[in-house]
Image (cartoon, rainbow, N blue to C red; front, top):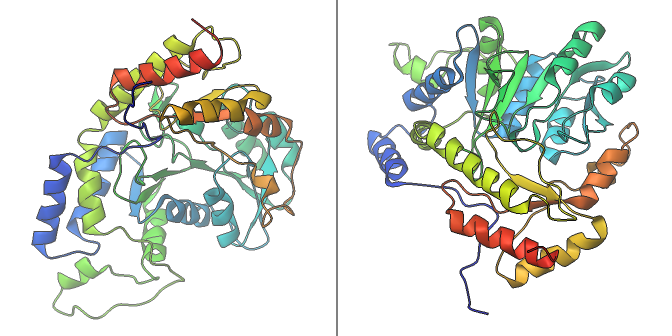
Length: 379
């Protein structure tokens, strides 16, 4: 077999435009949070089509989730219903807010939070629901928001996988309660690391600004505009969750190419779907990706065959991942209240993440798909 270059699971695209943006930001000399951060926030608002909603950039997606929970009023003693089929960042953010995660099962088709199972878990201590738009695919949002309204709880959307996705024709983040995004190294666009919170009113945005920067009432750039530069007040608890100009410069340059990046990722996912359709033992995502800005591409295979497929692909230089491990089995989280997790337990044994890169060559997708077809004996 001819030696071929390895194919990683993730590979961010960093072009000369991004490198120039970073160099320009470094030359400007203001490395912390500043005007470029504000420009990135403004750019996000334009991209999402926001008219009466407000954006705050953060240093990570996890920071955004923590602040989003605080914005929703989550506090010590509360419970937050969220999928066990999720990255641990959500669970840690809930705990950081002083609340307890309550593990809910997911819908088998979308792998998003199951509204019917969530309803059974809501109790007197429930403050919020945190659904994840897995892989960029919006879950059953209408049902979740209807449930939240009936029961008087908040919704904090974990859209860390779904920047650029749409639900019912509307951009995720352009409607709803609180929405959180991630711009880490392997997301649809990257800020090296970063995140954002979207909220619906200026008063909440102001509280978020205080929490983002140590509870200080005036950000450093704002203070420098005034002759009494060093006067400020500390008005609340706060954290160092701000995004620097350097990270924002990366994010802003990537944001300008987001439509191109999303279109390319959709093309790769559709090619996977086409090449793997009809392969006995392989289940592809139940979407044509029309409204999905895909962060990852996953398949499901019989649990007894997954390790063999992983090894088969590894020998051919193709890396894979598993998103996600079952959170309810982590030692730190075993004591969390939970509902029936039958779908989660099945999916975590079946799911496999295939390589998906921004601007991924069709030939690489063909190579991965051919190796999978070979393993399952498909022509």
